[in-house]
Length: 143
Image (cartoon, rainbow, N blue to C red):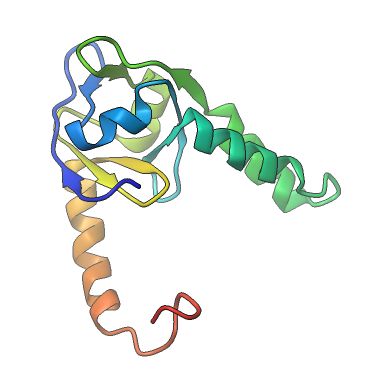
């Protein structure tokens, strides 16, 4: 499970050093793709296989499913961290997420999200008030 917020820097070659707490889960390979809210999603290779199996079950007759599948999978790239625990974020994903030097890498349970640090702070500031004031059940059975 991926938890917490980390603040690595993007190097001149478009690489980041994976946070120490995430390395074991991602050491055998990972998949990066476009995330919602213009971040980069990072899944362990094993988790991405599970997601792909679920996506494959979507009805081909659903335009919304086809559209989602195309955007999600066309941006995906498989990577393996090097010996220094670095991975390269492809330029297309860096551009999509507006990634510059300063990043926020957050644990989101089954995935990691990579955000531009400023974009993350803006998003978090907007969502914290909503989170604090939520008066209805958002996640069934939890809150």
